[in-house]
Structures are given as C-alpha cells and as structure tokens.
Length: 434
Ligand SMILES: Cc1ncc(COP(=O)(O)O)c(C=O)c1O
Image 1 (cartoon, rainbow, N blue to C red):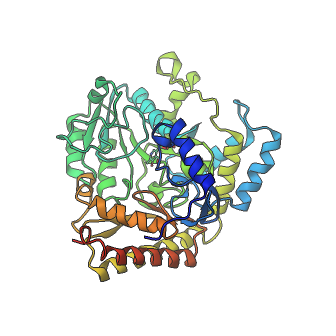
Image 2 (image 1 turned 60 degrees about the vertical axis):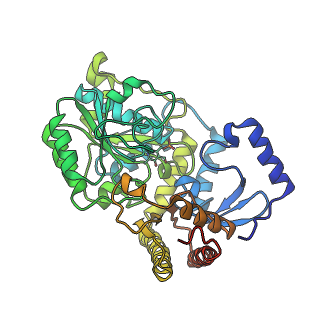
Image 3 (image 1 turned 135 degrees about the horizontal axis):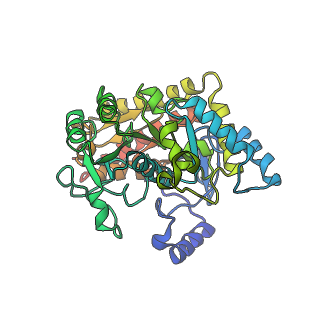
C-alpha cells in the first residue's frame, strides 16, 4: 500500500487530539488524518494529500464543498449577524421551501441535528397518539437518543420485538418503550402493528435503511398498516431528504408518511435539521392549538439559525436547476457499475448495494435485505478496501459512497483505478483473498 505522506505539523496535531479528545477524535471517525480544506468533490489533509471525497461531511455537502452560491449566501449573512433566537427571514423561507418540496410537510419545526429531529418526531407522535411505544427497525439509524440507540447495530441481535441497547448509559426503562422489527419484512411488521396497535405511538423507519433499498411493497405495507390504526408513520429522511429526489425518499419511492425528519442537506453544511409533517400532528408544537396538556415544548438556541438557513436555501436553489439530479445519478451509476464490473471480473465475494446517490460494496455474495444479512459481510475485506482507497486518494466513510453534484468523470476514473489497485493488492494478502 503506498504510504500517505504526513507532515510533522499534522502528526503533532494528531498527538494533541489524542491528549484532549476521548479516543483522540470527535467520535465520528479515526484520527490519522486531519482535513484542512475541501472544494467541490475533493478534500485535502493538513499534509497536502488530495482525496476524491465520498464522505462529504457524512452527507450534507451534496452540491460539493464551497459551492460558490452557498459561500456567497453565507457570506452575505455573516456581517449582518449570525444568530438571533427569534424568527429570521432565511429560516422562514427555508421552511416555506420544505413545505413546497416535501409531500408530507405541512409544517416545519427546526432544530440543530438529525438526532434532535428524530427525537422530536417520536415525541410529537407520542403527544398526538397519547400512547408511548415506538416501533423501529433493527439496524435503522435515527441518531443518538436513548430511543434511537435501541437495536441500531446489535452485535448479538435478540428476539424480535425485544430491543438491544447499543450504548452504555441508557435507562433500562427505555427498552420497554421500543419494539424492534426486521427491515424489509412486511408481514412481520404488519402483524406487530396489528397486535400492538393500542400501545403504539408511532412507527419510525429509514425508507432506505443505511444502504438497503426497501423491497417493493414494504413501505406501502407500513403505510397501509399504520393508516389502518391511525398510527403516525415517521420517515427518517435525514440522509435521503433532497438527495434521492427534491421531495426526498417519500417522493422517490412514492409513499407519503405522516412525519419526517430532515437534516444534512437542508443545512448546506451548517448545523440545521427539522421535523416536518401533517399540520394536525405538528399542532402539538403550538400551545394555542392544543392547550397545556397536549403541548410539546421545543426550544433550541440555534434553531433556524440564519447562516445555516441561508446555506440550506442556496443549496436547494442549486438542486432545483435543470439536470441537477440527472447529473449526480448518472455519475453515481457510472461508479456503481464500474465497481460492480471489477468485482465480477475478480470473482470477489461482494456486491454493490444502494442507489446511485448513496451506495457501497457489501463484502458477501449472499443476498442482503436486512441488518442481519449485513452481519455476514467480511469485515476484514471491507477494511482492506477502505484502507487501499484512502491510500490511493479516495476518502469515504466505513460503509458509504456519498455522491455529489460536484463529482466528475475524472473522479470516477480515479476511484475505479484505486479500487483496481485494492483488488491487485488482495493477491498479496493470501489471508484475505480466501
Ligand atoms: C438516517 C439518519 N438519521 C439521523 C441521523 C442523525 O443526524 P445527526 O448526526 O445530525 O444528529 C443520521 C446521521 O447520520 C442519519 O443517517
């Protein structure tokens, strides 16, 4: 593997990080490189190494780093003030745009992270339904709240519907408030919803769970079963919102939930997220409509922050331009197909899973439709490929290629070359190349 050149300054800062940050990092990813800057579809580390960037800040930078219109919008706001707590024009206009674009969104409440958006989506469902239990899917990611950390990534999955907490520090009582179902299994979800209809406050699902597309009919079945009993269906669109289509995954897959959470793209690279949905459910954020008992208090110092909202609005404006989605889908498709072709030729036990704007290789050739299927993947092979890609100038998350509008044919060609180098290196790693 070609070694990455690391400067004395970068190595020293890595050392400082080890001293002052638990585990030496912000909690999100490893320590060994420090990103200095990004432009369009590329980033540079402190030592000057250049990478094609498929991490995209974990997804927000869908139009690329430092898009000139997003930079201009934020630069226009900053000298006028960066936060006011009360309403500002950009925040109101962003809410208006979300209502126009997202099918389920009649009202929008901002906060600062996807974790919060999901937490409030579940809470407002409870306030509306006057019930307590939430049904979620094993392997579904809804941020870091106590509820969301139920069976997010259990190493030893339990028996459905009993949840497994994925973190220390979660009160045991929370396990009694969450039920777990297998993703992509409509019959099981339907029968759990029917059996527990009188206890359920809501059903939360990533319409595209991590990398796994919904099987045809799965989301429709959830929609029908929840509608039958008046249980709010929540789509977590923190990742898919404005990415799979301008109207999000609910538009892309043609199934409209009652509530959704949004984040990442709508903040244009700044901290901003939202819960959005049906007016009668969102009414619980308005004391004048629901009175003291039904009211859900929700306050956040930076909610609807004007710089973040300006960046989000400018990002959405770029996405409304003709050809925006066709372009990024075409680039993503070219990379997906190029990698799949190499896998086929090399006879690798692996497959490309996902949609052209968000996918990755899963290192098993058995079908992958739910969380338990993903556990069959070869983690060492995944590590090998990710390390080789990084060493060959490709930055990605552990299990995701996020595509951006800024990625080019040259970026795809560079990445395919890096992937080929990783395949070639496999021959020198007999323990891996089983
Ligand atoms: C589907 C999904 N929901 C929620 C979140 C949490 O968002 P945040 O990291 O902004 O709290 C994430 C983060 O990646 C996510 O992928």
